[in-house]
Image 1: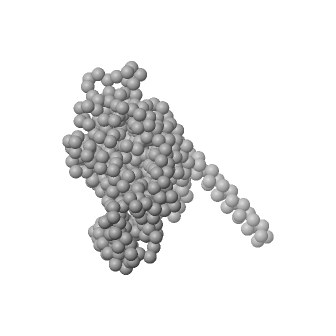
Image 2 (image 1 turned 90 degrees about the vertical axis):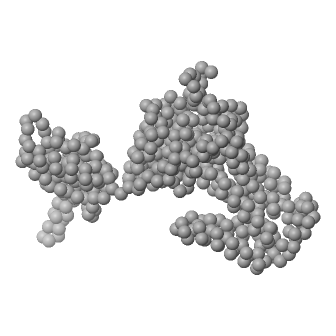
Image 3 (image 1 turned 180 degrees about the horizontal axis):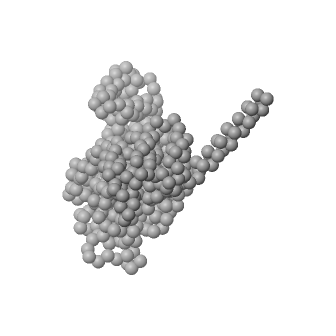
Length: 512
């Protein structure tokens, strides 16, 4: 008999749970008690869920549900609770008309209610009503707008993106107050939906580019997205190249400049940056400050960056090749100095270079991860102390310390963090090629890098443009930066619909 009763109770519990699961996926009930029971099942063991019971002037009972910490309590108290409690019965107006929240909509499905509460919206249930109101009450902690530390500027604006997509889009609209600035919105994530916005100028951008980018975003199927770099990993053309195919910027003026050139920007809620593409190789050596100074100064600095690109990749490998294979090309006095400094070093040049480069990368990473005052101390004091101690101990030579220092300074000149990271990675295989084959290995490695750059694509656009394919008109803003009044057309490398960006007459690409 006891076994039979246990079996009955088990079956009843099973049917009760099954029925509850079915109800949770169904529409809401007209009963406040039933809806509260369903809310407790949906958000079990989540104490941040707040349910406030109200009695309207109409005599109906209402419940306002929201997630504490994700809402603006000023909006809730001022625009929802106070109007509902002070509402007097008027046959011409319903209780819905008293709420002064900017955006609201009616919902019936529990799946919609669950997602709305989790993103900071409030849900108002009213007794004997088969619909609930979804109210825009998002708030919670938010960082103030300030200058991005990784992209500091001397003469340009000192505004940076924050972790709010709506605020970031508003910053961009301040630079481009045009109705042609269009926004397509998506939801990514099966466990936690993340709003993603695709921004572009409709009369400038290539429509095929927007369709391709839109299709790639729609194919993303993950639990959720935390950072902008995750989106980049899903939509880039070649995931195995060390060169970035998109740029991530925290500056609204830089983003607006790319949009005006015919590119597109992807902004993710909760991420302080915009993902811009398609990019070409030359664009990673341009900064917003280049257009705030005289063109001669900007040209000199830009040429300096390209020289630093080659120095950062090939200087250690050239040192290894000349010391190991081609010492006859070194002047005699310098050769004697190098031999004297390497007299006590027990390692071959390749081991010596690897030791110093790895120590340099460790110091760089330690300086980034530690707090700012300590990080600067580690970078300066650590580099000096370790370098001097290594030379005195006979582990490395003085010349090797100089080579590593020049290489590090050259990599710091590159304005793009993504491009600088790719350069640091290329340095190690080039050192191995120099150790194995000398100058021949360096030339082979350089040819492989150039061929790879010329065959790479970003969203189907050539990465090597305007060099390959050659576009003479784009050369005004590549290795040199000519006066702004001479750059009358947008770069052809991104294939814009509208080429002309100066003057009253605007011609489309097909008409020219």
